[in-house]
Amino acid sequence: MPQYSEYLAAVVFAAGGVVNALLAPRRFSAAVLFCLAVTSAGLGVAGRNAAAHPIIAAVLAVAALLLALVLGSVLLADGVLLVRRYGPQAALLATGAAGCGVLAVLGLDAVFLLLGGEVFGVLVVVVNAAAGYLTLLFLAFAGYAFVWGRSAPLPETTHVVVLGAGLDGEGPGPLLTRRLERALEVDAARAPGAPGVVFVVSGGQGEDEVRSEAEAMADYLRGRGVPAERIVREDRSVNTGQNLRFSVALVDGLVPGQRVTVVTSGFHVYRTVLLARRVGVPVHVVGASTSPAYWLAATLREFAAVLWLDRFTLVGLSLLLAVPVATVVFEH
Image (tube, rainbow, N blue to C red; front, side, top):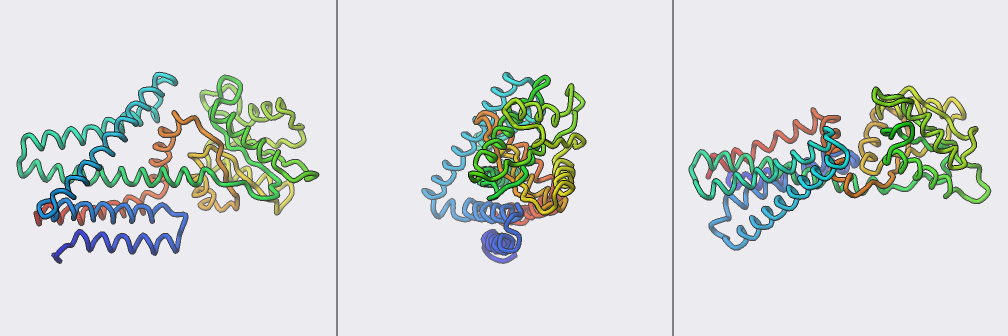
C-alpha cells in the first residue's frame, strides 16, 4: 500500500469531483466525491499527524465535535418541536432520530476515551468516518437546496405549474398555500400589458384527502381573483414525476412551445429539477418559501430522496469511503 494513501485517495476523489462538476454540473455525485475527498484527508490528518502536530489535531477535533454537537442538538430539537406541533409523522420522527444518531456518535467517542481498547478503537474509526462523511454530505445537500430554492422564474413565463402538497381539510395546507402565493407573484411580475399567465394546478386526491389537490388549488386561486379561464386542472398525478409529465402534456396540448415555470417549495426544487430531466420535460423550477422550523426536516427528507433517486451511483460512490478507512485501520 503506497505511503500516505489517505491523501492519495483524497486527491483522486477531488479530481473526480472536478471532472464530474464540469461534465454534469447539476448532479449530486460531484458533491459526493468532494465529501469523500474531505473525509479521506481528515482521516489522514487524524491518523498520521495527531502526534506530530497535537495542537492542530486538537483544534480540528474540537471543531468537529462542536459541529456534531450543534447539528445533533438542532436536529433533535427540531424533530421534537415539529412532532409536538404536527403529530408523529415519519419525516418528523426521522429528523429527531437523525439528531439522536449524531449525539450517539459523540457518546461513543466519550466511552472510547474512558475505556480505550484496540478493537473498540477500530469501531470508533469506522463510525466516526461514516458519521463525518454523512454530515458533510448532508451539509452539502443543504447548500444545494438553499441555492436552487432561490431560482428566478423564466422571463416571459406563459404557464405556471403549481405542484400539489397536502390539504388542510378542504383547503390548501401551509406548504401548498405558499406555493400558490409564489405562483401569484410570478403572474404579478409580468411586464405591463402582457397577458396573464395560465395556472396549471397539479395534484390528485390522496387517500387521506377529501378532494383533489388540483380542485382545492383552483378554488384558492379563484378566491384570489384569478379568472376561471386562466386555471387548468391536472388531477390525476400522485407523485412529482407524474405532476411534471401530465402538466407539461396539458400545456403542450393547449399551445405548444410555451414557456413553463414550475412552482414548488424551495427545499423541493433540486429534486424536481432532477426528476424533470429524468422524465424528459423541459421546465424551469422555482421555489416558494418554507417555515424555518420545517425547512430542516424537509431538507433531510429531500436528502434521503435524492440519494434514493440516484442510489446506484451515489451509494456506490459512497462505498469507496472503505478505502481510506481500511488504510487507517490497518496502518495505524
